[in-house]
Length: 109
Image (cartoon, rainbow, N blue to C red; front, side, top):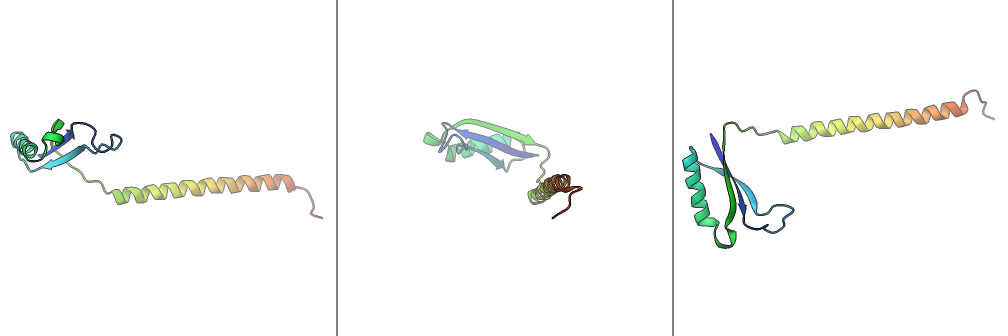
């Protein structure tokens, strides 16, 4: 199992819109009781007085997957490029159709 702790300090921290006073910690515990002890030690060493915690949640996770973000963004860029190319093609076709309709059957003098 993997253990993580979500902690939120009292108050809003530096800016409530970005959540400075919130973080997720990776714990080195092997059991929930070890995770609790580890968080209590962290609180005793780092989170007291002005940095007291308002909230602490410990999560026991049975599977962790790391996503390949570069692959995601590459695929997203390809999708957006394809969509833009199709929109450009439709725009050019509509312009062509308009000109064709305008000049069809007319001689240029």
